[in-house]
Length: 209
Image (cartoon, rainbow, N blue to C red; front, side, top):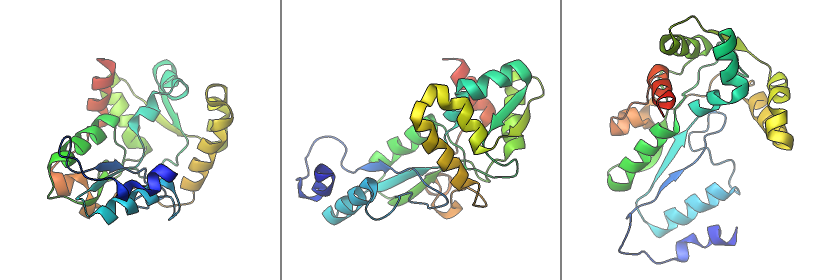
């Protein structure tokens, strides 16, 4: 933590990017996703702010790459069922790592945009929307099946080990809120004119690699 708290003491250098573009995982509807005033990311952000350097915070919600986990993706191919630990009516601003990278790249050079920049689909996608995107890519009918966080934890435990408990806790917390959607006013769509990939386009990119 010492290195984080001392970030404001380091002099600016003339080479390399002239502004930091930080990524903060948004949690439970918090646009900045700092996880509390004493978290590492919150300390880092305060240190950067104290320098007076222009900066931006990239704030995604859930990553589409989560849907490529074998426990999620294999049943899609074998059974035509997309199982995930979210309510079917729970909207999420999903984004891919590719979307986040494009936003970060733009922010490194575009100093006109500062503060939090939300990354993800607007409006938020529900279970049926995810399934429709998979259906469009695979050419068949894919249905969405909402798992409980506990059931999902049992599926991923062989892969994640003890860390599965943290995943379960995260999705249990999500089950208590109405959505996980970015604000339109601070979205990459509004601030940068960048729109995240559709589910179908993202899948096509992933499967072509």
